[in-house]
Amino acid sequence: MTIDRDQDGDAQAGGADESYRRGFRDGFDDGRAKGGEDGEADDTADDDGKGGEGGDDEEGDDKPPLYKRPLFWIILIAVAAVLIIGGTLFWLHKRQYQSTDDAFVDTHIVRLAAQVSGQLTAVAAADNRHVEAGALLATIEADATQASVAQARAQALQADAQIQQAQAQVISARAQRAQAVDQARDPQAQAGKAEADLKRYLALRQLDAAAVAGTQIDQARQQAASAEAQAAAARKSIANADAQIAVAQKQVKAAQAQRAGAEAQIAAAGVNFKHLDIRAPVSGQVVSRSVNIGSYVQAGSQLMAIVPDAMWITANFKETQITLMRIGQPVDIQVDAFPAVHFHGHVDSIQHGAGQAFALLPPQNATGNYVKVVQRVPVRILFDARDGAPDPRKYAIGPGMSVVPTVKVR
Image 1 (cartoon, rainbow, N blue to C red):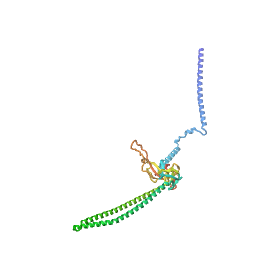
Image 2 (image 1 turned 30 degrees about the vertical axis):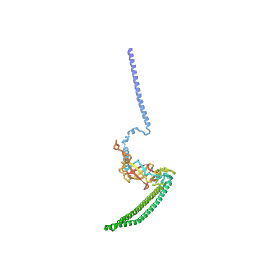
Image 3 (image 1 turned 30 degrees about the horizontal axis):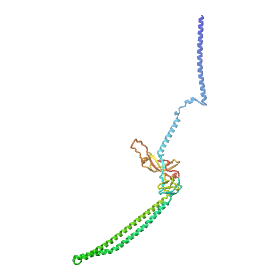
Image 4 (image 1 turned 90 degrees about the vertical axis):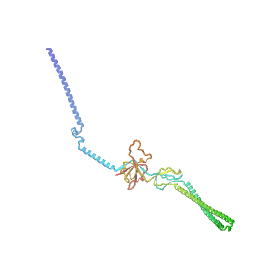
């Protein structure tokens, strides 16, 4: 009985322990569950506090996405329409113009050089200043030129004296010829008479051999020969006089030639005298002066240069840009130095040929690998200063300055 009682007690004790452990485990689980609920409640309270006044998550979750709203699509379509219309209008406007930045101001620079050698006695202080055509810019000393003129005039006077002397010799030779002609008349008459007597004696002898003696015939022949010799001498004197006349006439021509040479020297000296004054051949701005008073210059040495008032633009357009380009089309010109000033002009001419075709060494495309490159065609554009347009002469615009021309081709 005692053993059973003990076993029952142990059984009861074991059951109590098991009940205790199960109760502890259930209580722990209940605590965790309760703690989780409390945490969720706290988080909910915190979210409500952060949401501010009027915050409602349930209302936010009920709104549709942005791309599903009609207003979004209305704004998107309107923006797209504006971009398309604006792009189309821009393209239609842009296609009317052709522009390039490969363009420069150009002109024919006039370079002044000395045509005679000498020392400069005067030089105008016209650096970077505008001068009119004919303005005196420099003067070369005139001593050497004046000496040349004096020498040429002296030679001309000497030639005049030689002409007069030769003309006098011509007159003298003609007088001598006239005298020789007069002196030749008597010998020629005597030669004619002697010849006639000889012929008469010979005729009588043929008729009658005893009518004329042989001595008479011989004497007549001697007289005819002597008279003929005298007549021949007279004729030679006349020919000699003619030769003297010809020589005198040639001397006159030679003296006249010397006179012409002296006149040519005088004219050349006069030209050189004019070249002593160096004047502006055109109106423009004086630049690049390299001499001063007292400088000795050689013939052909450059003294200064002039940028003429007449300037233009050489624009190198791509060959694909000149399809619709014509002479006379208006051009809007923007000079890099004066971006706020809009100059106006027009197309003056278009070169027939690309610039590379006129190079010193043109490319040989027939050899090696060929790569096509768009060529440039020079186009000349003139400034228009009428109708209130800005006058480029009033601005510091010169050759070599960069410009951007825009040609209206449509």
